[in-house]
Image (cartoon, rainbow, N blue to C red; front, side, top):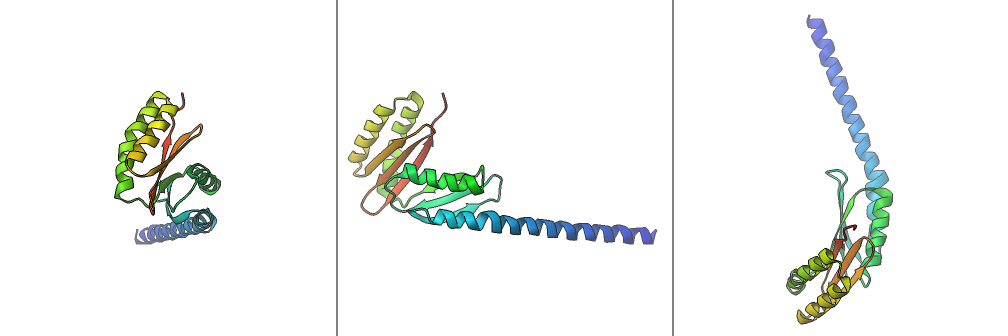
Length: 169
């Protein structure tokens, strides 16, 4: 009986050691084949200030802080292409370097954006966003494609970027 308990304990220790090695190898491969190359590619995109990868939960989130970018639409597409190539399914969270004025303007504009997305009246949304931003003393640039509405807000030294997904109709 005592001999059988030792065998079971030895098998359990061997199983745990094997699992530890396998999970360690999986983590090492993920780091060398996905995380490090992805971070390096994203940091090369013009305007990127900081990249933080969060793959604690599947599929993962890529947090990107941008400096002043002249065209958020093409920058986002470039970032998305890199993320999909190396970490398919991961989502991208874009942030800028906002101040209180831009944050307040973004809240004011969120109603116009929501209304435009709900009604599909993008021309009216654009003109309303541009005029409201002017009243808040920030520069707004708004772009649209088949998947998203892109909003960039600027003042002298700060910026904020927002990507609003369009619903397929």
